[in-house]
Length: 127
Image 1 (tube, rainbow, N blue to C red):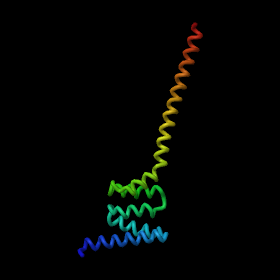
Image 2: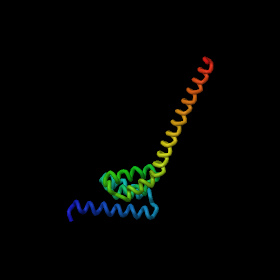
Image 3: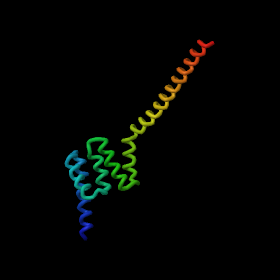
Image 4: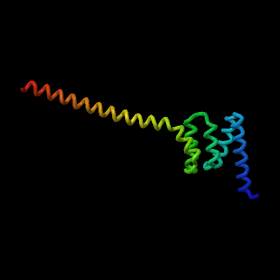
């Protein structure tokens, strides 16, 4: 086995060790192994994917999944997970835009009403 194959085999073995640590709920140890793998190869798609499971926050998980998709834009598992994480945020953005549109409409109606009342008052004194 040549050096490159042996290195790849060692990386896969270490990834499997990290996965086993995650299954045993030894997350900090798993993160350490995954960090080392990612430091060695920032394009190690599977390491990024498993890191998204190992991290503590949704934001960290999103960053990891973004990296999976950077390496492989066709990774449907990462895309689906990232969508589920961001789904609420996406829906809130849509709702925010609708509310902003209603707000702008109400403000415009208010100013039209004010201007109409102003003209009514002005013309009632002149007539």
